[in-house]
Length: 452
Image (cartoon, rainbow, N blue to C red; front, side):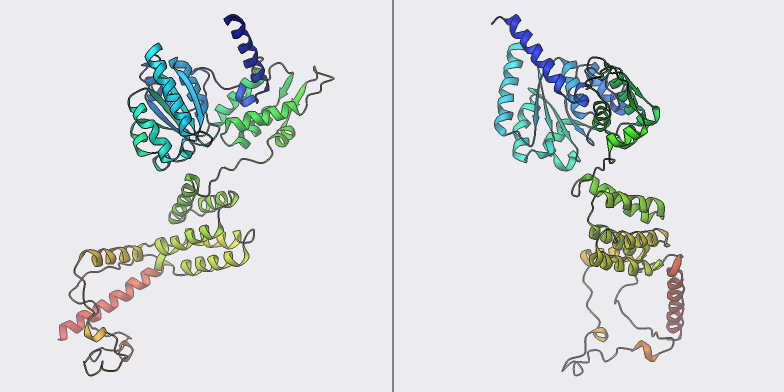
């Protein structure tokens, strides 16, 4: 078989494969000009664009949610740099696969003076040992590594690889970006759906964009379902109408990205707690809904509310801790879906309560002193005296029982050799009353000391 025939058969095979590919795969951009989104690092004069323009590409780590172009951009970059391109999926790749590609990369560089781009999808799924195999050849420039991950690479990727790479954070595609992709797919007669007579309303396209939640793959897949589900083999010229009803059927339920152990888990928990601390009940209940819809453990949510009640509300409204404790118990008892009700009640209560972290600061400062200063001995009058022999040793003999005095207080030493104030109540909520009471006691102490 001649080389010309081999090239012809390869082209036919490639065309057949592309025909069977989903629309989202067929419509992948082939050039930087076709690529949509991520203008914060790929726009004119932005970092990655400058690196590509200068042909000074280093190893890259792409991180971000699914369907925003990480794999696509890696392929576009490989084409732009004229480098050899190899792709691996971390869950199915082995160390042998990596070593085989390294051998090919060395040969390609030595014989053709051509560098190799190795794209590893879901690189966070590689073990530390597998990631270590790449280090020397990435550092030597034999491989240009492009790793893609949906997780925080600073937690999930070997720090040595991170230090040898430039990290780019991908964002969800905007509504405008997704609309461009939809219209491009409808009009493209070669790779897209342009060969079909399609009439799509703006309302329908807007719904497909909204339901995809920034995911290009989901948007294009829904469009393809909408078209293919209406095709009639006996009437190929029949106009395919895509209205709002068709769009709703095609996209079904809105995608809800959530990983109970990954970044989304911690980011949503952080937003939830910070919204309660920030006294925003609307944001609080929204992030609560996000976690519930994502399948978060209700016990984890209840614990976050309880922690926030103690840490950020404290004695400014002691009922916040009581209510959050009740929510913890009720959630254990009833489970979902009913558990959402006490969770919402407790979270909104905490968000709306006056705030004080005085208790938090007090225990933090006291523990700091315990760790770093000489340990104070318990005064003899405060020691336990409920045992035989305590009286003979005079332990507890000088203790003054506060209830024998008016107003339920007597001046005596509780913390020897210290004039530190750990607890400083704020002038808000119930702590305003606490502050007033402590000031009253301070006045009594001053009077007692002045008469002695």
